Length: 155
Image (cartoon, rainbow, N blue to C red; front, side, top):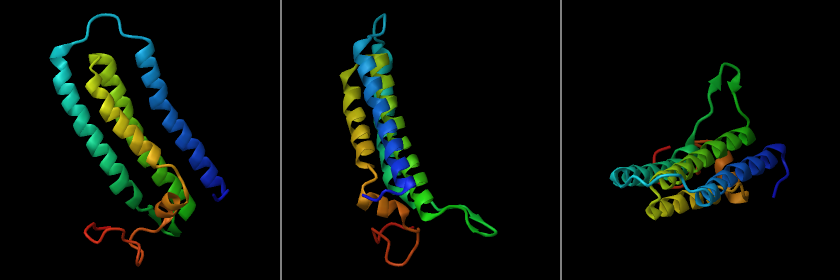
């Protein structure tokens, strides 16, 4: 693993973003809300949760790695390493948001059907670890020759 400052920062940021959903879920299990769950809002919340997790996880893999740097009159605003760090933050934040939304739905409804979407979002967050292959994918220039991972997807 490369020891560049951006790569070390990426690992630290990834760890912090991965810890939050686990800690929130532990709090949700440790401190049940006072009062009864609201079964009349459980179904719509679970439907919105499922759609949100699916969209955010897909966007974290398809869009975040294709973000283009903003161009300035003097050239690109970001180096390849900083671009990779920015893409990683966006991708992991999307997955973290989906996982935290699942915890909130679980806390409000106390319905265990909110836990599988949490697990999916958390697994997607964990899979964004800035290892060598993922870091190389995040740091490549969009639209560069030979970098299209899927010929059916437009850059």
